[in-house]
Amino acid sequence: MEDKVVEIRGLMKSFGDLDVLKGVDLDLHKGENLVVLGKSGSGKSVLIKIMVGLLKQDAGTMTVLGKEVSTLRTKELNALRLRIGFSFQNSALYDSMTVRENMEFPLVRNIKNLTKKEITMKIEGLLDSVGLPQSINQMPSELSGGQKKRIGVARTLILEPEIMLYDEPTAGLDPITCGEINTLINQVREEYNTSSIVITHDLTCAKDTGDRMAVLLDGQFDAVGTFEEVFPHAEDKRIKSFYDYNFINS
Image 1 (cartoon, rainbow, N blue to C red):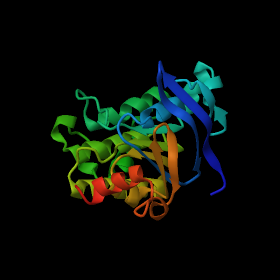
Image 2 (cartoon, helix red, strand yellow):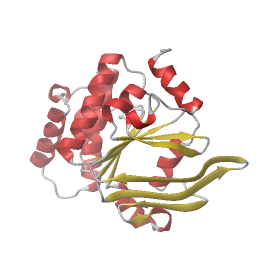
Image 3 (cartoon, rainbow, N blue to C red):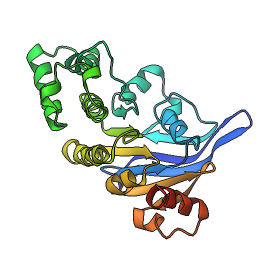
């Protein structure tokens, strides 16, 4: 995995007197699932917001698909965002729209001249790939939490992104559904050739989906490596307590 689709060097971000990112370095390779672990408020979401241009760093560089994000003009930034899929923690479905309409919305907004038949085929194909072809005419209120997550992933894939960002994909789900979502994340990588960043504090999700782990503690990546390299024999008490909370005290 030599091709880097994301390259982060010396990234720093503060809010007033609060230093959130303190010079972090990280790479995401083509075809890789990279898990970013950390407690709430550790800077995981700030990292992602800088990646898609919602925030600007104070120092350092964030290069995504060959583009230094902070230097892009609005038109260039919007074009880059279309190449990045964001699966939100709450699925971000429009409650007043059916599943079909939710999936049509980004497609017709960003890709012109598609026929109704082409749109339907694309939607049906993606719903089939996430195992929910029967949900096409349902409302979000009729779906379970796990089904909403799956539909959210399908809608994100409809623009064929090169990079997928998963924000706490298993949050609030029961263990069986968590396992299904973890399987889906791996399936998406295989079927759609995506590179992914999975933001989570769920070590089971991390172990099942991640090629590498990056643990964000006190504004820096304290450990980067495979699950076995980072856990469960970590000497750093902060990482060990993270492991114990997930696998021993839960």
